[in-house]
Every structure is written in C-alpha cells, then in structure tokens.
Length: 467
Image 1: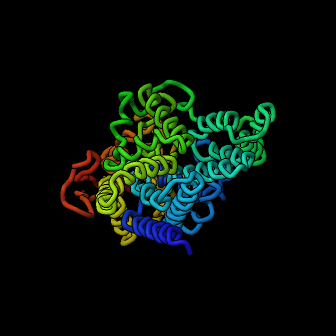
Image 2: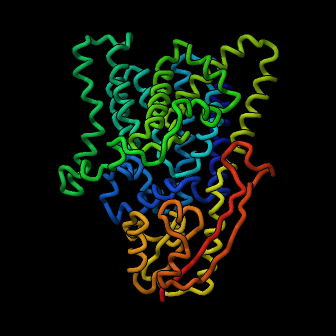
Image 3: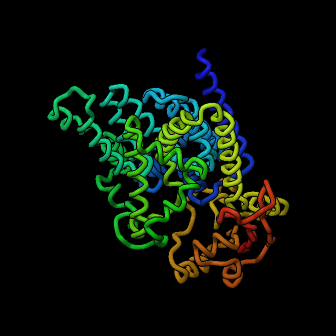
C-alpha cells in the first residue's frame, strides 16, 4: 500500500473514533436543531410526511431514518461515519486536483472547529458537505451528468443547495475541459433539477398534494422578516477562526489564490458571502451561525491544503516541526471549542431529572417538553407537542392540557423558545414533582469564557404534573 494512502486511512480511522467518543461525551446536540432532526427521522416511519417536509429535510430524514430506529446514539454515530466518508472524498479530491500532501486535507477538515463539533451530532451540514465533495469529484473525473445529479441532491439536505446549484450550472457552462459544444451543455443543465423533481414527486405520492412543499414552506424563509436578529456584514469574517481554525486562516487565504483549486474557492466564498449578506439583512430565517459554513468544509480543507503547501515549500527543513505545532495547537483549540458550547452540557441534567421521575413514576397521557432531548429520552412522538405560539397563546394551551400531563421544563430553553417558565405551569394548576438547579462547567480545562461561547451554565430542570 502507498505510504500516503496508509497515512490517510490512519487519520480517517482516528478521527472517526474521536467523533464516536464525542457522541458519548456529549450525548445531546449543542443546539436544539440536532435533537429535532433526530426526532423527525425517528418518527418519519409513523408520519411519512416528514420524509418530504421542508423543515425536516428530505435527504437527511430518509438516510437517518434507518439508524434513528436504533436510537439517538446510533444516529449520532452514523454522522461520525458520514464525517469519515467526507474526509475520504476530500483526500481523494485533493489527489484529483494534483495537490501535494493530499493526506493533510483530512486533519485540515477535522480541525475546522465547527466541523469537529458537528461530526458527532445529527445536524444536516456534514451530509451536505459529503454530497458536495462527491459531486465535485464526479465532475473532475469527467462524469459531468453524475456530478449534476449529486449537486441536485444538495437541495434535499439544506437550502444552500439552491445557490450552489446555480454555481454548478456556471461551472458546467464555462469548464474549459469539457469538449461538448455550448448548446449541449445548456441542455444538460436540466439534470440539476433532478433532486427537486424527485422531492416533488415523492411529496405528491406521500401526501396527495401537488402544492404540499409550497404550502409547508416556512414563512421566514421567503420574506425579509427578521426572526433571529441581524449582525454586521463582517460578522462571519470575525468568526472565521471558528470555521477554519485560528492558525489555519493564513493557509486558507493563500489557497484561495491557487488557480488549481478555483472551484473550491468559488464554492466556499459563495456560501460565505451569501450567509454574510443574509445575516446582515436578517433575511430568510438565518441565525448567523458559523455551523452553516460546514456545508463547504471540504472546499475549505482543500483551499487550506493548497495554502499549506505554498508555505511548506518555503520553510524547507523547519516545515516538519512548525507544521506539527500548527496541527497540535489546532487540535487543542478544536477540542476546547467543542467542549466550550454550553447547551450540550444540559444532557446529564436532563438524564438525572428523568431518572428522578422513574423512581416514583406517574401515569402519563401526554408529555410537554422544552428541550428535544427530553422527548428523545421519553421516546415521545414529536407531533404530540402543542402548537406553540406567542406567550398569550401558550398560556391558553397549558391551561387546557389534560390530566396526567407531565411537564419536563428547564430554565433557559423553555423561557427563550416558548416564553414560559416552570412557575407558569404551577399557576396553571400543575403540581411540582421535582426541581434541581445546576452549575454546568467544562469537561476539560478550567478556564471558562475564553472563546466567547462557554459558561459556566446556570440551569435548572423541573418536572410538573397535572393529576
């Protein structure tokens, strides 16, 4: 076996094992989206509409519906395998592009802090990244039609697929290596609609509604209504250390100038500019999150590799020592970044509260929860959740909840997402069964707050019951 290939496989195996360990160190997601996406996949076999839903993401939900049957950890471990496959194809793409040291693309992918964070969660971005790099490799191999079909599948996983499909169309039209005449290229662009057509046909077959996708399209994704706030136009630029890694910014910037990896630069910069503008405008329901850039993480790794090579070729005998130091520091930063997210610390507190209930269980006809992980642990159908609205509407809902309703609430997510506190349930006639406050700190290291996202997190869990 080629020593470089052996090294690449060792890197991939090590990182998949690391992502697998993170699954058990952090049993839940760093955001509610991770748990909700699992619930959609887990219950899609009961509610087939979820297979073709806009919010539940058809491509993600279908693929994850199989490991989800085995439970939340199994679905999260599946993401570790997706991340490993993404690393394998990124390495192969680096070879296809003729880059030296292609195996280095693997740590340059996993040491992107946000990529490592999502490599053990049930978020949609890693699957999108895998489909993207597979499509790029197909196009580079001359399988242009297959590449477009892969690109068309991006919209089944995340909204960025619409924009990158347009970029892909431009790539097909101007690629100088394609011997086909321009007219044939234009006609072939219809393959980029394959994913959308499959989605519409599937939705029609499952729901019987020709306009199901349009009817269920989230309102905030088609208007300029500000939902999650706004930020300065340069906000994503300031958060590039979370996306790329603080020490890998210079290699990334140098790589953008390498003509051999121009398509990677176009893909990465398109998503970067798009999300910067959307967050500045507060449009289409964007929340300004750095994890959105994981969608183009293979392109970022390839650009970083091109820049790394440019630097390494100039360092001569010092490159081994300096390169090793950069990778070690990047690894430490990425691990501390994962550990720094405070919301993922709630899982042990949620698990403890559930165990308290099981010590003295009551008959439960309905569960009302503030965190997705609570519903996951109780194996509750997400469609049983009330149709929450504003605070006035929510107070009416809890007043009308039936007897034998168990409320599993917390002090942070509940008030923030639903404008309700545990005291509101007490005032509505619920009996408090259990409450406990927590100060949730890092698993590793002692210093808090050094990267602006961590704690300590002051949280409390509550169980209330309507007899």
